[in-house]
Image 1 (cartoon, rainbow, N blue to C red):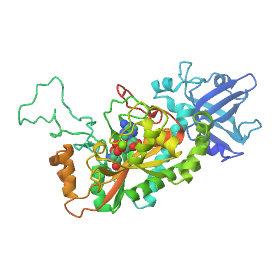
Image 2 (image 1 turned 90 degrees about the vertical axis):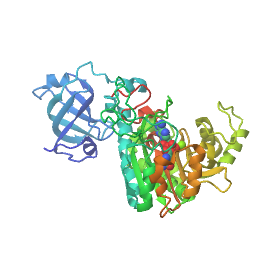
Image 3 (image 1 turned 180 degrees about the vertical axis):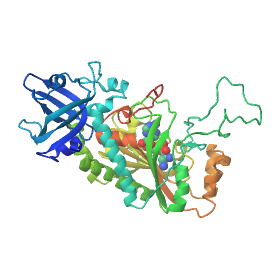
Image 4 (image 1 turned 45 degrees about the horizontal axis):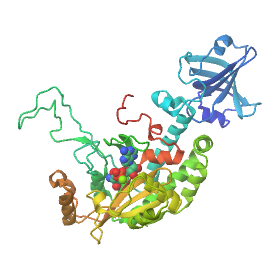
Length: 460
Ligand code: 4AD
Ligand code: MG
């Protein structure tokens, strides 16, 4: 009999027939008369109950199988007389493929997320992380479907680049430099030590290269790993994260916000429709009210608020903030959460920020003080999307670069895109981990990425 996945078996596929299942033992209860194994193969949240009887030749060995062992089970899929599951498999044969003894760290009991982080190589085999990484995979596929349905070109922007898009000095340097080697002489090139000859780093955003492709393919998006040397030990920052960055030619800030809203609502709808079993787990055990909140976001239209109004609202707030609020200062997470949770009660775009706190490429507004920026703020997370209309006027862009001290020589290719066939264009970046946090209710970014990279942690 051909092997089928547990998800299919639990849907009744092969009912009454002999099937083959392979997976890992989550729990085992063995007595003289019968042994019950709960088997999981990652295809769904639920385990499949295996019933083994003493008539099996290796019954004694079956009773001694440890939690965490990999097994293959051949048997008949039947309706389960017990409550709690619809189907179970009556074993004809149970073969241990990979044994596990009592030193297996995921014995059946509640483990803290902190402990599970220290065994990131094993935590995918736990209930919570099984659910997290199934949702993550499903939502990633929905991201591609959303853009494919709308004719966006998928472009792979470089990981190694010399452009610090955000200008925040958070790039990791890429070099083969041996710290013990003597310094190079003027004009000397040693490829074994300085491979790229220019100061190359890991990308902080694919936007600048994405803009070049938007000036050829109209609508494009990137979806890839992004790196930031932010020494911020917060539950929302990772040194390596994934970002989705669409870019549209012939588009302004309002078109940008419209796309962001449609996209975000699409992903909320997707996770409810496609990941029901995992979402029910998160709703019951991680974040009560999650499903209602995601449902509400999927059905609502998002508010838009001027930065100036946001500052006014925050100034009038009765709660005491840790960080100061004043026109010209950036919003901190506490401010963002207050706006989306207390003032609006749902997602809100804050638009038209002061130019001093935003990157050089954002389009200058007519007031000469603000730029056409937008941040999408959502409950519990705060900023989840950052975007803008881009400065398409060459002389204005050059003026801004001079003003903030961005060297035009390193960006000659970017400036070229404003020299020939420049168009108004706009885009945004959605942090994929923050999205997954928002959709699952998980509260630490380290718990929604398979192998988190944070300060002093890149081990496995
Ligand atoms: O606001 P940011 O810095 O915007 C950009 O990088 C633009 N170039 C995007 C664009 O317009 N194409 O980052 C965008 C989003 C943030 O809103 C946040 O969700 C996420 O990326 N992000 C991080 N996520 C995890 N860890 C970090 N260190 C992050 N930094 C940003
Ligand atoms: Mg931002």
